[in-house]
Image (cartoon, rainbow, N blue to C red; front, side, top):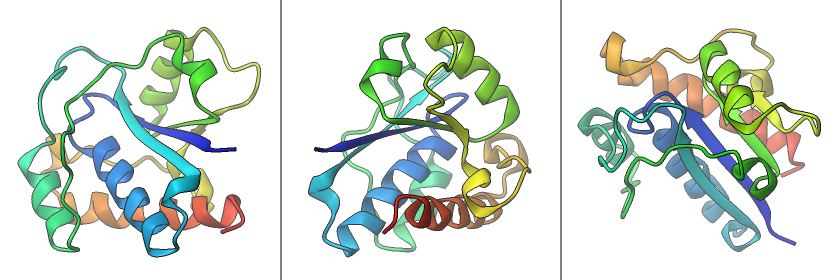
Length: 151
């Protein structure tokens, strides 16, 4: 059975596509990419239809990761049933995810840094301009997510 994971941030152009494509790459390196469906969404409508931010594209390219055919999409209520895990980047994302999907009765919603033992948020490089720090925090969270999944 395929495990379905959705990464979520505010606009789906910086943090969540960075997490989506980094995690896809991590799974591919382990030969597990066919066992997982990894996607990303936004909590807002501001960037719907836009490609990932050039800073995200540039940072991922440093590691040979090239996001293809990715355009921002908004999270929907029905996504709660679609995904096994819905992973936000900060506290505002978590609040908005729960609002959009109508609660979290099945405990599917997490903040990415939780997987690396941190309670902090992943800073939005749209505001900070620091894609390096964001990447490092996302990488730590994804490493922790792999451990959580037993990989």
